[in-house]
Figure (cartoon, rainbow, N blue to C red):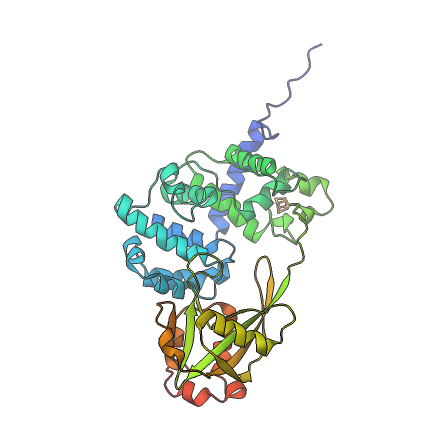
Length: 388
Ligand code: SF4
């Protein structure tokens, strides 16, 4: 007796009909439910690229005002390439992960000099630009050029790991390859722009990290985690987060008349290119006062005395946490002439906001502007148009 043929399965484990149904459902859902986001209003490669750079490690609501300001200030690749790195960092100030801004600036310069100002549509060429990894390249190629590349970001990893009930750590290379392969398999040929954005949108608005709203999910019928696990949100599996070490960081706000000393961090490395008040890490068991005197002398050659401490600022980076201790200082030497480097500036108080500072050092500026903490407010605000 002959057996009934089982439905043909695609390599993903879904039948051919199920893949077709999945594609139809997710595209239809996206056409109805997509959010109105500024970077979706056109498919200009430059705006797609900038939005993707801004959205790395950043939520949509945080990135949105930055996108609007960035595009107003640098409306074209040429404008970005011609800007100074200080201007670019200033437009990124407060968003964190400043390597993205530096890379965008470097990439813009190369796009203008090597590609005549046109963002390349070739995967090798675009993937060779600073800051454009496989995900960003796939996003630009699909959204701006509608090429068939599946873009797998954190949202898509979450959706796929649940759909296919992948219980291995998603940081492992073989698992990453499998996720990319699954996304490639599901991709709708000729509709890559909509498909990629639909998958990202599903992860961002329905298949949420903690509380997925499965009852509103257009592809719930295909989801193994929803069918087989009591709680789909246990996926994707990630390595346990290590305790972030803590360090005390010291900063001297060296005031000389109505000017204050700022230094620029080296261009490569953490917070590269941002401005800050001189200082450094606390060493061993030294007191905070000894530490700030030592570190300001070490970084600037200036001897200082402490006038007043400021409130502490706590800040968490990806791999460590800091407590920033700021001190108002005066000079005890006349060694100003030693500070001739481009990386040091004596800046009038009202000019401080023209420079890009990290979030923690920006808090120290807020304290400077506050009567409560320093008594410098009058001098600071008398010339500052930004003070309410
Ligand atoms: S059914 Fe639930 S867990 Fe599965 S993809 Fe949809 S929202 Fe995510």
